[in-house]
Every structure is written in C-alpha cells, then in structure tokens.
Length: 536
Image (cartoon, rainbow, N blue to C red; front, side):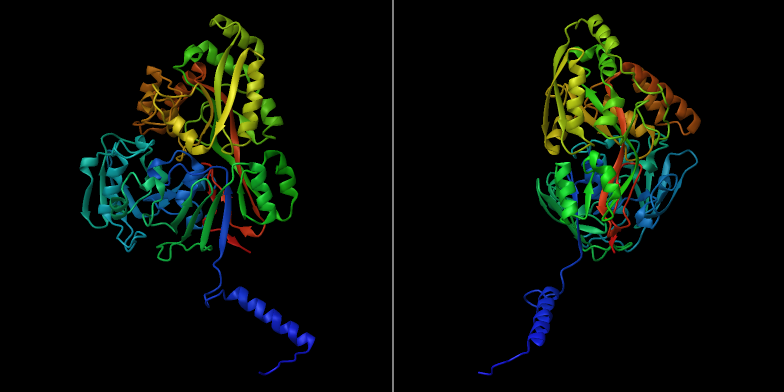
C-alpha cells in the first residue's frame, strides 16, 4: 500500500478540485445539470389542451408547447410586447396569408420543414384536422365561437403547404382569434393516439412549440423540457417548472429564498418593498382583465334588475382598490377595458358608492330586509381575490345582503363555471375576464351573448337580452371599424344599465422575478412573456 502525505495547502486544493468535479460531473460521468427555471403560479391547470383554455395563467403554460398559424408581435420575434406593436399579427406556423375581397376566403401559406414533437410533419392536412377539431362539438372547447365562422366542410388543401378556409360570413376578428392560444396546432397523430378525452391530462409530444411536456403532478407542478428540434428561436432554459402555490405570500417567500426565479402576483401590499429590493425586479403593466362579481341572473333575487343595480351601489370599489389591492386596479367605467378595440366609457368613475340608493332599490324589489346569498371566490387567481371578497361581503352586509364566502382550488372553480343552469351551484361569484384577442367582441360576446351559457360557453351569469344578442351578432360580421365601434357602444350602455355583474375594476398585471432573470415582460392580454428569458 502506498501512503500519500500531502501538505495542508495541497490537500485543500485537491479537495476543492474533487468537490468541483463532483458538481460538474454527476455520478455516472453524465454532463452538467441543465439550466432550469421555476415559476410559482397561483393555480393548477384545469386542462393543457389549447382548445379547452379558460384562463390566461394556464394559457401561458400552454403557449410554451404549441404554436398558432399567426401570433401577436411578441418575444418570439424578438420584439418587446406592448401596444401598438403587440397588436400587430406576425407569421408563426403560417408564413403569409391573403384575404379575398369579399372577406370570405382566407388562404395561408405554411412554414415548411416543421415537425410536431412526435416526429410527424406539420402541413396543410394537420391544419385542416385542427380546424375541424376546433369545431367538433364532441371536443371540449368553451371558446368554440372563435371559429364558428369557418365552414369545416370547405377547408381546402391544394398542396401540402397551402390551406384555404372558406367562411360562412365575414369575420373582422378571425385572424385575432387564430392568433390566440385556442388556435394552437396539435399533432393529428398524437391526438388520435392519446385520445381527445386524455389530451387535457397531458398532451405528450403533441405540439410544435419551443418546449415539450414532461410531467404533471396535479396540485404541485408541471414540468416542460426544451424541444431540441424546434423550428424557431431557441429558448435559453433547458427545463421550465411551474410550481402551484396558491398563497401569494408563500410565492414571495420562495422567490426571496431562491427556490423560484419568478412569481406570479405576490401580495399586493408588498409591491412597494419589492420594487426597492435590488435582488428582485417587478414587471408590471395594465391589462384587459375585468374583475367583477358574477351574478346568476336566473337565481332568486338576481332576476330583478333593481337588485343587481343595488349590488353595484352597495360596493365601494375605490376603497377596496386603495386598501386591499394597494392601487393595482382601476374602477370599471364600462363592461370592457381601454385595452380593447370598441371600448366606450359608459359612466365616469363607475357605479357610485351609494348604500342609501342600494337599500331603496332592494326595498322596491321586495327585499327591505335584504337576503342571504352563497358567495364563491378563488384563492390565488386574481390580485387579493379572497381578501377583497371578504371586504365586499362586509360592505354588502351594510345593506342587508348576507354573503357566505367559500373558496376552492381552480380546477373545481372552473367546473362550477362550466356547469349548466339546471345544475349550477352558483349564485354570486368572483370572476375575471381577459380576452386573448384585443377586441370588444372577445369580451362582450364571450360574457353576454346568451348562446354562451355553460356548458357551451363561459357566461355563468346566464344573462339574456335579445337586443344585446342581436347587436353582438352584427358586430361580428361588419368589417367597417367605425360602425363596429358604434355597435359596441350601444351594447356596453345596455349591459351597464342591466347590471348582470357588480362591475369592480380592471386589474394591473404583474410578476416579480429574480434580478438575475432578464427578458421578462407582460402583455396587454395578461400574459407574461418569459419563454426567451435568460439568466445573467
């Protein structure tokens, strides 16, 4: 046996080299661990199928795995998102497109050489399959109305990289709808292999996007890995993990501890301190998100418009924004937000806080002593959602309305929102709406057209006004922008007076990141742009 006798300094040097070697080359001689990023989000996904999307937080995750024919001008093109640049649509899986003079025929030239993550080709037949799947009533798609102007029986594929869509009527917002997460393309082979009923549980190898699905531990995390064969700009990180952390304070703690590199909406009261912390970066901006109290217009007291109006008078929105949201919102002055084409300010300052008028209307409607109502809210989905629900309940109690608050995880909440009228448990509930395409049609039709009642759509207020329905249908077909603006002005005025919501505020959108993480921005339709973030 040979005995080694090293001087202390030499021994220390050898130990350091060995330790560094063990870090750089794990057991088995494998390469160094890949770069990774962990993002803390407030909710788990209810589905990872692009067609089934109900919320932009989940759509953010889905965007990592899938591409659409066209897309807003964002980070994928190397441009910082923000109006007006963001509203411009640019090629993604389509390289160009033309529209016939009558607006009824759309011809797309497709990108060649693109493969789905299962190795099959992206081509015109794949687009045809996806459009027909978008319109298939057997497939869950709460936003099917995005594409119902397309005639599924008249989709032409004159060559492998050309697809022609024929419309049943003109559709001034069709391109914007195609440029949403709902319009993202899946591999036909993967869909047939996995099955439409299993796709929501994890679309393995189904997309063409920069990342691929790896695993989904429900209630805990979703992990994606870099797509080595991505046709476009390559992302920096090899692995992206979305950690499900409903508590905003816990998300902040994890960020400060370095357990995550980005956190979705930490506590609003902490934003001033977070902005001053040199180790962190607050990324924020206005969004098209309406936050409101949904009222089941077919339930008991809420059938009476006077009760719904009283609810609007009973809530002090400015006080809640100041004391609970810490200024991260603006009182709604319309059923839409200024981020959308077609926006009209209906009432400056919004519905005024007037509990005396609220009590008067309640008495006129036959509820002089008020009434009790079931009040549901998510936790971790919107800024201070559970907290502001408590403040709202206290204010309603002042006019005799006794709201009993309950909460749940997000997938359960979505299930409530998509339950038909005969079975719905909903009476009053917290909800927000941010349309993926920046047009009033996406907000007003999606929430107030009676044909969008669940389970067909996502309008759980069960509101119906024939005049509103007629105007919304007109707005979807008239190409003249000025005429559409006038139509949506009328719609917003009617809805405001009918008060199917308690109109609260449009919330700012923000994320907080490690200061070492660069290239993160937010978009007007409430998405974070971090696919191409990097670590400095």
